[in-house]
Amino acid sequence: MKKPHIGLLPRVLAAIILGIACGLFFPDWAVRIFTTFNAVFGQFLSFLIPLIIVGLVTPAIADLGKDAGKMLLTTLFIAYGSTILAGLLAYGTGSWLFPNMVDSGLKSVEQIQMPAPYFNIEIPPMFGVMTALVFAFLMGLIMAKTRAQTLINIFHEFNEIITVAIQKAIIPLLPLYIFGIFLGMTCTGQVWHIMSVFLQVIIVIIALHIFIIVYLFIIAGGITSKNPFKLIWTMIPAYLTALGTSSSAATIPVTLRQSVKTGCSEEVASFTIPLCATIHMPGSTMKITACALTVCLMTGMPHGFNLFFQFILMLGIMMVAAPGVPGGAIMAALAPLGSILGFGAEAQALMIALYIALDSFGTACNVTGDGAIALIVDKIFKKSE
Image 1 (cartoon, helix red, strand yellow):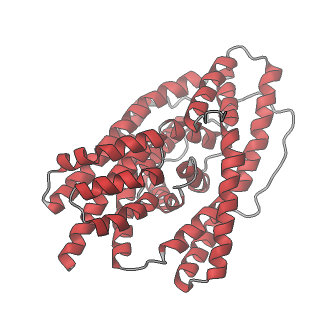
Image 2 (cartoon, rainbow, N blue to C red):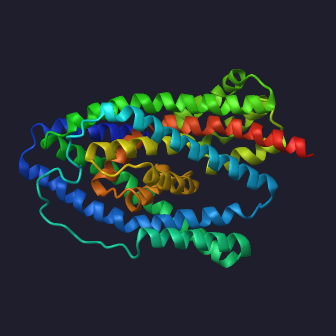
Image 3 (cartoon, rainbow, N blue to C red):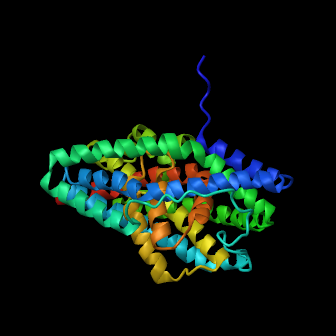
C-alpha cells in the first residue's frame, strides 16, 4: 500500500512548531547538533545557488524566444509590468505600515548568539551569484536568438539535474533546517518577537493578494468594458484550485477554461495562460518583497527605495524560472536576496519558511491574475486585426 504523500507546507509548519517547542527545554548539547547541521546545510545551499540560477534561468530565457512574435512580446511586457507593480505595491505598503509593527531593537538573525556548531565544512561556490546571473542571461538570450539546439539540449538536461537536486536534496532537508533555525531563535529568546511581527505582516500580505486581483481585473474590465467583479467571480474556480494545489502549472487547465468563460478568445487564452503561468508572478513577487522588507526593518539592514527597486526588477526576471519546481519562486529569489539585499543563510532560511507558509495564496493570486492578462492581450489583438 502506497504511503500518503505529505506536502511541504505541513512539514514546514510542523518544523516551526516543533522548533519552538523543543527550544524551550532542549539542552545546549542537543541544540548544537542542529546548529552543526544548519551550518553544513547552509554552506551546501550557498554552493548550489549559482548552479540553480544557471540551471533554471538559462533554459527559461532561451525557451521564451522560440515562439517570438508580437503576441509574445506584448504578453511579456504586460506580465512583467504587472509583476513589478505588485513588488512596488508591497514596498510602498510595507514602508507605510511595517515600521509600526516591527520592533527595531531586535537583533539581526545572523547576530543572534546561537550555540556554536561542533564543526563546520566550508563549501565555497564554484562562481559568484552575479557571475551566474550574467552568464544565465547572456547564454539564454544567445540561445533564443541562434536556436543552438545542442546547447539548448545541454542546458535543458542541466535544468533537470538541478530540479532533481532541489527536489531530492534541498526540499526534503528544508524542514529540518527550518526546525534548527526556530530551535535556535527560541533558545535565544528572539522567536516570540519575530513571530508576533510576522503574524501581523501575514495579514497585510493576504489583504494585498486580494487587492492585486481586484485592481488587475478593474484594469482588464476597463479595457474590455466588462464588469470586473463578474470577471473575478468567473475566475474563482481557478483561484480555489491553485489554493489547493499550490501549483501554477497544475492549475493551467482550470485557468484556461475559466478565461474562455470571461470572454477571452480560445486562441489567445491557449497562448497566454500557459505563458503567464511561467512569467506572471505578482503574488509571489509581492510576498517575497514584503517579507524581505520586514526582515530588513527587524535587523536594521538597508531598505531604501533605490535598493529595493533594483531588487524588485531583478526578482521579476528571476520569477521566470520559478514554476515547475517545488518552492521554486523562493529558491529562485535566493540569488537577489543574497546579492542585492545582503541576506545571509539564516535570513534566507527565515524567508523560505515564511514564503512556504503562504505559498498557496501567492499561487492563487498569480493564476487568477493570468485571466486578466489574457483579456487585455485579447483586446489588444482584436483591435489590431
